[in-house]
Length: 200
Figure 1 (cartoon, rainbow, N blue to C red):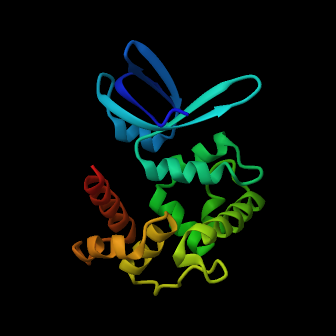
Figure 2 (figure 1 turned 45 degrees about the vertical axis):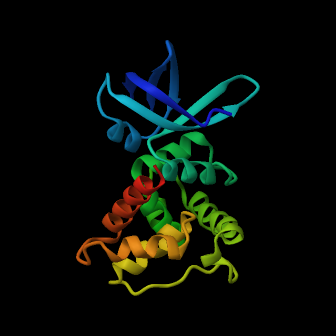
């Protein structure tokens, strides 16, 4: 298993980034979100990876942060959702936004992603809520996601971060320091950035 690749970005095209490490170029299938985040050719980058081994191919998928990788690996466990569909979803949705949609059961928003029909969106919500309930203490009570008031951006952000696997006591102090006027998505992004710094 290849956990990550770090080196020089030598080529990009839609859905693909090639990172050269010690003279070897690793072709990583990826999202538009990651392509935007990693910068231009010649940049030093690190991609967190998932390797898929099939009878006819070995494919490497790379992401600029662990949260996007985590969401990708969740998505490909859903029946009928392959790597291509997972990349399309995460090209349209940030990890924080994706977590919010799953947590709230917003099937309509998921169907706005090209190639995702209503049945696929329903399977994503049902399957991932069940799986997260087994590993996330916030979802232990029958897989129910805590409801939050519509205007409670901090509550929305906290629920989404817990869906992504963070503990409430871990992220709440970080959230408490942020601007209360920020949107839920901005709060999630800033918290994820700060959590990443803390782990370095």
